[in-house]
Image (cartoon, rainbow, N blue to C red; front, side, top):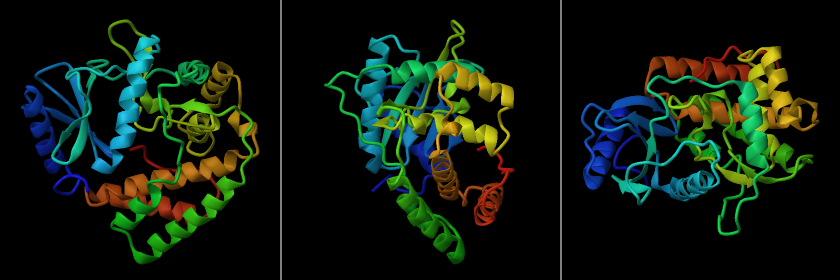
Length: 300
């Protein structure tokens, strides 16, 4: 099981206080930056960011994240660094907690062109045999999120039917890029410019895995093609930086549709947090029902 209560601001702040007390840090005044799959807090007492995972069931993924980011530091790859306690993750209140460097006082996102270059570099790394990575399981958390969400019965059935359909479509894909180390959630929101030297670094490694490299390219493509969050020029620069256009691959629509379903299921687990989230989830489900077309989804 996870922590001792719902994954809310109140419950995760208690988790943060327990974790900080266990390792000699002060949690007073910590700012909640975001709550989603993780609750992310910025400490005031030290230049650290704490990430609290939703449940202890995610511990293997967090342990992989810790191992990979430590290895990436050893090969000087520009990724966010662990900081604070030597032994991580810290288990507090039944949840894994990790502590990271504060990349910048004010968040400045890098460019999609830099994201393309960094992904090419990441995919070119040969991870050491001692680094055991999980296999990508794109649907691993979808069913649990849908079943645990506050949804109307017809919406739940629709999403689970969509899940079954996409499982079958994914099983039939023929990938063209070699499989290997992937970030797992590569998008513009996870590449930040480091304040100290201006270098673009990749953050949020809890989805790290071994799998098809196309998985790391599809979010930027759909943010352009489906949501209009990137311009054509920006997407062109991303493709130029990486050297491959995932939209030219016949399997792209399947990965795009899978990512959309994941986005809906991810947000659905937080419908109780605010009316705005609940309204956005309802809109997203209706868009899925209506089939292909531009999406006017709010970024969360």
